[in-house]
Length: 560
Image (cartoon, rainbow, N blue to C red; front, side, top):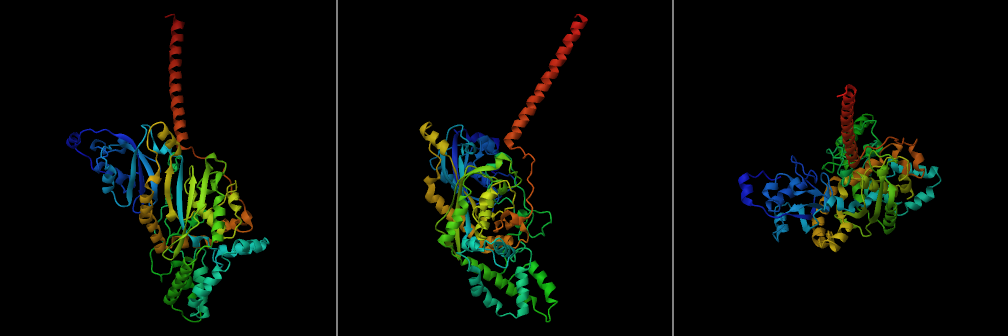
């Protein structure tokens, strides 16, 4: 926020007319504490507002409080989250023809104003928004099957055999059936060939013997709310902070909470080895007939881990596999009950029903560095907290575990299941949609339509430079997706075995369905408050009337 101006400065500036406008913006959230203004931290709105004042679009008299300019955001994004297109509405001084350039000159390259459009006087970008487009970027190796030595990999194969569905399972995995065998031959065996049998056993125990991912490494604390939070702000949903990664999970944690701990890897040497690996080595080497160098084993384990990552990065998804991915995501479309795809929602809560207009998978993946990526785009009227990340997590599990696509349909019914939410790294707000307003604005009020296509070239260049490249660099450095799915695969609990051929029965007894009423939304709380105020005023009025009536009766009784 800009510093307060003196009375003399305010008086000297004079008054200029303000106009209600929609400001179309884009930004990379890296290094920011979110979109929403926070006077104590660096935020997108804070930098924007300061740039408006510096460019003369907001007067010095109104520089101390955005409310004076009727500041409203269409979508609130949280820490580190990006937006290629977002909208704010407010009153600005827009006399200068080059006002957009002046504002941008006072902004970091991470934030751009695409355009400023005159609107109707009552326009609110939050209220006028019809729907939102999101994009999620994900490496195609996220759709590879779990490693055969992992808990999930072993369990899905065993349950396919147990239910006589092995042929069906193999058919659903036919594009990738030989991937891990080929990877072992090309990448892993050359490393293990240099070890004696006892050392090889130690390496395998360190990699596969833990109850969590074999590449689980203590990482920095991660905010649970890396995801975009949009209309939930109006519904009263608040974002909670996730427990610091690296801590041992408590027994009472749910499966999806556990999976989302420790999923980010710190920038470490390729030869590093996690504490769990060291613990396995420390307890095992003392029982061997000869002493084996922990340092040597550390290097070998690190080499094997990096070889697995290299094998996954070299994977290129086939058109058949991509079509299978699209088939799974298409099942989300329509009005569905997404109670399993957020937090603390009962299947009987009406607000769990959301409408998805489309969920498309790009037919042309792109290769950045040595990793292939695919773009997922979802268009919906509204979304709940973590909904998109859980939709991606569930769909990826269904594809990679050779599960029947109809399991998505089952997850949208009343049964309560644990769904891990995919990393927030790949998620960004593509753009909000204002079709209803645009129709009226153009035909009735002679106003420009709010349409990001007018700025498509600039937006695409910005998105590649400031958003995509940052996502790609972070994945290259931290192996976020590799670590996340590795942790899911080695979570030794039946919570995720609903993606096996046995279905929900493989998870054990069904989880209890809450019959408690959901917490009231913000609008409901306001209505309740109004009712309480009205009842209170009525009670006071009744009390006054009773007092008057009592006085009248007393007067009648005494004849006065």
